[in-house]
Amino acid sequence: MSEDMLNQIKIRPATAQDIGRIAEIESVCFPAAEAASLETLTERFEAFPQNFLVAELGGRLIGFINGSATSSPVLYDDLFHGTSLHEPQGPNLTVFGIDVDPAFQRRGVAAELIRQYIDKATQDGRKTIILTCKEHLIHYYASFGFTSSGLSDSTHGGAVWYDMTLLL
Ligand SMILES: CC(C)(COP(=O)(O)OP(=O)(O)OC[C@H]1O[C@@H](n2cnc3c(N)ncnc32)[C@H](O)[C@@H]1OP(=O)(O)O)[C@@H](O)C(=O)NCCC(=O)NCCS
Image (cartoon, rainbow, N blue to C red; front, side):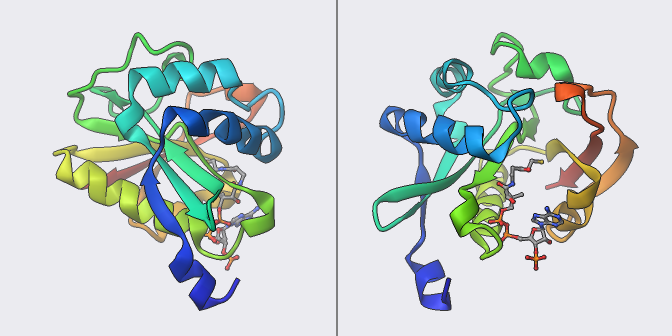
């Protein structure tokens, strides 16, 4: 993608009409054991719609980021299961998912989503952004200022995860 095309990417809040396409992207980005279903994504959108941002190119949705708020300093697995643990005023904003359509990866789309997610979290008065990631992405999140506090307790999807925190 050229610099010009990257400039044409629009980051905006998600709407309910986006959830089908969001679930489609999630299903191609993650193995079945880790992917959130359409039902889960719909439930999350209903609980915290303001925490969903999408990337759009020429009217087509090509990526998204979303998360809930919590008073926990780290992301823990129960947060993924249902939305009852969402604390709207919680100081820490999680990243449950950041996905970019494989046809548009490695061109800076996720970076733009992360930057705007950070801006929004700052404006909302959050204190940190927390996420868990696989080892190969630690350096990527570190490039935005996240630091790793080591192995997470998470066993989500049977994978090994690392805790990452960005102080705002
Ligand atoms: C991770 C993801 C969101 C990145 O989206 P993107 O738009 O391609 O990201 P950017 O273009 O902003 O940044 C690309 C950088 O991410 C890192 N990266 C992405 N995938 C990587 C991989 N498999 N291994 C190592 N580094 C990787 C690299 O630093 C890469 O830079 P490079 O192309 O110069 O090597 C995308 O690959 C994706 O949707 N993956 C599947 C879902 C996923 O794993 N999400 C993260 C959950 S923690």
